[in-house]
Image (cartoon, rainbow, N blue to C red; front, side):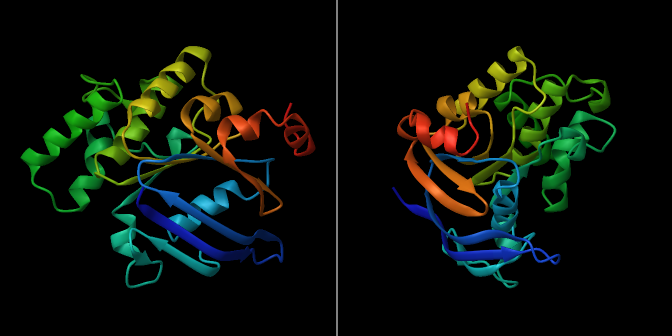
Length: 234
């Protein structure tokens, strides 16, 4: 498999002096689904934000052959999309169509092509026909799927998801798992939902206090009872 993300010796400390990432070394490969698990405060979301260049620590990050620097930042962000934990932070326009079209519109894509992208993206998340619906009238699970569609419309190569199953009911959670398994794209998922990780991710990375303490085949890691209990998982 082709390596598309390489993180080398990444460290990050917040202004208050709290070190959140400590010597992170990680490679991600094309079309992999990788879970980032760990206790709250372990650094999972902070790591995702580094892959978008929103946070910049010490160390090296290479995405799709491009070093994470000011000169490459725009090109990298055109290739990576982040789905927030709360879809209400991602949906802000009057209609579903407007939300999904927002990203492509800002890239200067023509109206005809945008309409096709919106249609295709909604179809991928099982939300065809919702173009004229009001996002604030949708269920939380529907909003989550629309949020994913807004990222897919950008034709990204890497999808980042922060706690994607948070606050979903069982039916919506099952729909999300099926959706993620059907997306043929590199996925990096920060999650404390070990059931989702076991069904979606082939590999998991366990973070604790900003350090990678374990990593490997998902089944091997999650079935290691002493390891899971040591880091706060039942």
